[in-house]
Image (cartoon, rainbow, N blue to C red; front, top):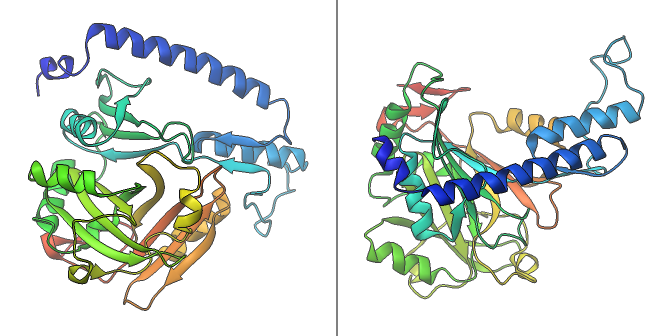
Length: 344
């Protein structure tokens, strides 16, 4: 797409305003970062990059040295979640068309342009960043939906276009649940009907499923593809569109109680989980446990797949990380088998 296409989605005044806000936010964040660094025992509320810093500070407060033989292979370096809050602040996808992704977010979700980001062209690639409006009662103040095409830094033997083509083949018209649907962001809404009606009016296919929550609420989820590898699952206990008897029953999709989640929530689109297809859920769990202090809140193996849901110490609303390990599925010519996607 030409540069003109980028300029059409952000006016010069919007560009200046975004960077003015971004500059002020950066200064504020720097002040907070410097101030928090003087108190190693304070409670850190941070994004992923600050999580590592808070863990270092905790080690220093315990007089653990990395420059001598104090640490051995037998030492427990897992995070002390009693002193660290890990706020999940965004979900990022690699896509080849960030402009279309951003336009989709603006049309179908309550979003605004992100204060930090490119226009969306950067020297390292392209960005389509938005923020979900009204997520102040979610796991942090504004949750980011980021799409990136880092064409200057390709990685691996397969192109991003090729991977998106695999998703095209596997997902088709969304009439059945397939393995790549396990890559998604889970969002909670008060009522599904507005989204169902909007998607139907624009001819956007969705895959609907039903499930029962931990507190016995009858839930319905619609799984929708934005573009490329970007997939969302929007769930609610309220909808009037589908006949429940016609929907496929799935295992638990969220380990928390919906009744507790809804307390005080008056807005929609609250991010409550991120899901990943996995070739080894035990490996992934151990990483999240040791680095971010995650704990298992639900697991299941009765469906022929291994599902492990993790909880991290977010505040004020719980955010879960889901890992799903399914039998090999070579539809589309590829499957998730080992530590990477492997061709048949």
